[in-house]
Length: 369
Image 1 (spheres, one colour):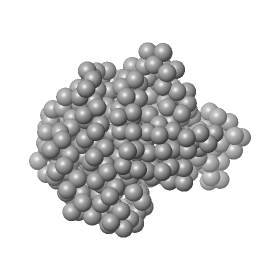
Image 2 (cartoon, one colour):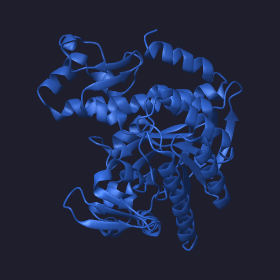
Image 3 (cartoon, one colour):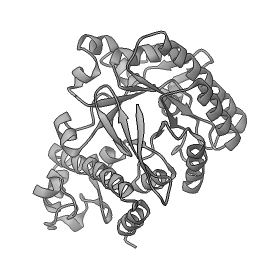
Image 4 (tube, helix red, strand yellow):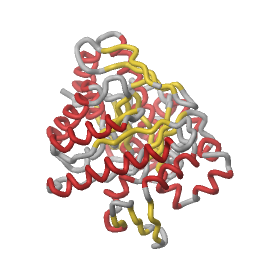
């Protein structure tokens, strides 16, 4: 399923190819996040035009609404949302972290109280696999427990061991069914290297199609985050795809690519886009602010997206200040294009053994150094 095309000579960055049922994915890649089966404000056609190869959806949220049976009757998630390329579905493990007030965790699974209507649902690792198989996603994730930072080592160990046990049950459940889906194992262990190492060894023994680094970007300092990412990536199997979950600033992505990560996702591009913040080669730009009232430049002169080719900062600011939906759509589209274009340039730099030079030059401009 995964082939390394080229290894950068001056770093651990690598160019890869991931073959799924719906798409051939060039890595390193970024997955726009469509939590509720939509990348907010953007159509599938716009995502394809921006260069998206794969998107992420959340099995827990679509389980709540519209419900798995509705999607199953539509022919699966791809048909339901009219997305022809690859989909990765998250399991609901992140919701153990983000919806801490609405859940109860046991060895058997997780009881969630719906944030929508208060109804209770108990999710087991086996049920989560069953739900994702019904969705028909190309890559599926097992139920895991992501903990907050800081986390006491005692509880971090319990959560890590629970994650491993759930991963084993998920793999056993998947093996009992014929499937073209790929299942990734998720490395947990908070900020403790010995727990991370133990988790990696257990997951490798179980054997997964790919491996994900979970439990980072949850409030820890940047240096500690990079240390964790480095430690884990150095110990994961070289021949398997490596997915860094939920880490999504341009700086973090480049640092992780240098360390050998292949796949990324984050809500940052669309979330900030809806608030009027654009990513540019000169850093972030808050286009709704007063200095752009009569600024007729595009968001980013180096960008070839539809927004930058057709609209000025002044017009975009006008849209935001009039609460026009088009404004947040156009900036979200630009941000997604910016991220996907960054990954295209990263892949080209790795192919030419120039990743380190590319990273330095990008960050120099992005940070206005």
